[in-house]
Amino acid sequence: MVEIRIGLPKGSLNNVKRGNTYQLFVDAGYEVKGYNPGDESYEIEILNDPEIKAFITRPQSTPVELNRGMVDVSIVGEDWVKEESVLSDNDIVKIGDLDYGKTRLIVAVPNDAPYNNLSEFFRANADRDTPILCFTEYPNLTRKHIMENEVYQELYGDSVPFVQVRGLTDGDNKMVQVINSDGATEVYIAKGADLIVDNTQTGSSLKKAGLKEIETIVHSSAGLYAGVACTGEKMEKAKMIYKQLLGAITARKYFDVKFNIANDKVEAVSNYLVENKFCSNEPTINEGSSFTQINVLIPKGMFPMMLDGIKEFGASSIVRSDVKQYVI
Image (cartoon, rainbow, N blue to C red; front, side, top):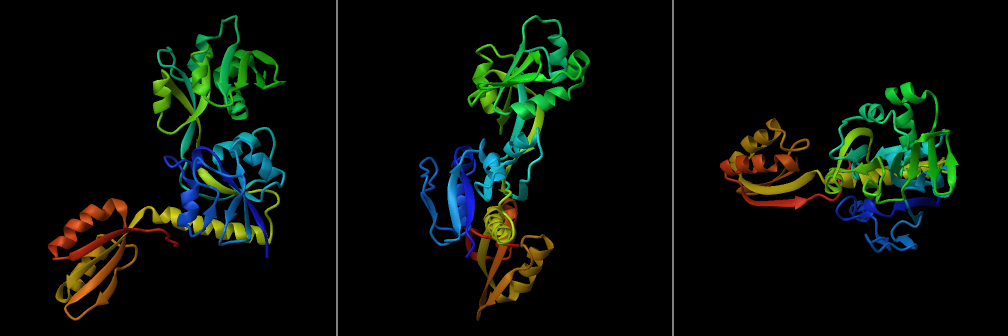
């Protein structure tokens, strides 16, 4: 038996309104104890798979744990993996995307600011005597993005923005300072910061704080990542876990629909479903003496159109169910 250590995210990726990683594991067929959203325990058990040992991980520290072999695999947003790899290469491998927890890392300024991108911002602040202050949870990605800006290069050349993460400091350009925020980043504008770099899904929280986006640094979503300790049998196990999770993710896009149709209309209905791509491959047909039950797996967005069509053929006893697992 091979034991694989998996990091399960605490925070937004296990929030019922955003990610709900707990429910993803349940839908994938795992019996999970101690990982209910908002009530996570440090002792998590995967009851029906003793090969998996689960730990709670914070997204900010997950790449560090993967790089140092503290966990073998983990679910984390791509933004945090990129934040860890800006200053040095790492051996983290993306096993696959999980298509949830989608977010963007953006630069934001006050809504009434007279600039619409970072270049305009630096030109407008070129002659000021006080430092430019930027607060963020992503100091590495932020500094990299700033240094790649052409106007910053015109004004400061290769000078490195000053970065402060709690008591640690780095960089020689104290006129542009990037300061670690440890969360609630949007409030720093009201406290006197010039700009922030933060992740957002819809931008609604930024608007409530009186801010506007001026640039996007990176797009991100949750994925399953493997660290330095995930090799050989562990990697094979990790790929199996990913297939299970991906099957549950894929299933959320479909409905399982069953209905009855008169036997003399089975061929016409079947052709109608296939020609309009209302089923994944072809319908499943269970013929009876007078009526036949037809079963299709249909993309959710196509269901209303299909429903109208099969009713015209006289379909009855139509049952629509959610799909828990769909492994392609």
